[in-house]
Image (cartoon, rainbow, N blue to C red; front, side, top):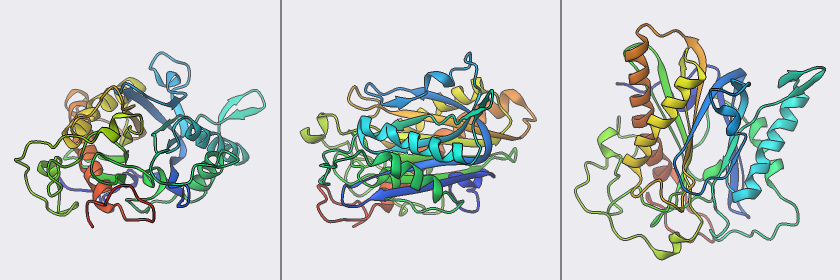
Length: 323
């Protein structure tokens, strides 16, 4: 397999990603948006999720498409990022038509970054403004690492970050992943190699080789609540919401490959799966299988890329992997 030209989720044509962050607070928000509504499913496997409008994404619900997705820091406060995105989309005339009103559909998920050394004594919730700013900056090219929802992210031993990756399948379909890595566990067994190394393409996270060591113990400081890895996988394959849900479920394999442990009672690990429905399937059974597999491997790579790209900042509580 080969990556798309940017090795980003935006190699899926029509998708854009925006980031906004506050370095003083050490937090931020990330938005995925498209030129038009897109099909979306979700799979939650962590024990402590924080979400908005995920019930709406079940295949038996009335709304099959969404206008944007948000990933945000801030724990429950960060859910307000979706409100900022929805307000701005409404001004743009976007949204689900109900009579003479447009209601933007903006599901979101949050991670806990309230104990990462930033100043959280705000007088007004900052996430609505961060969500709107992220949407305003949405573009095909975007930065990885300590930006957006990955700004204040941490792992057991290092800073986390925002990661992305893509792959082009032999069928011609593109699959991409976008992830804010903030796990209780670690992306590395020894601080030198990545668990995701077997799936690396073209030294995209440092050519760190195959791991052979057992994982280290996880610091007790991460056994509280400041965890959760949240992600989006996307494709241009023309699939219904039920298949998106299955792709999101399969993509959790990538999280388990790249973060050890994952899906713990203290993590709210969640994956959205989105489709622009641009390219029909030629072999529905085989193509659907390959889309799920590609989503998993792509997400594993994106996780390692996010950790690899993290950069140091004043007041950090953990070092950067690539320091």
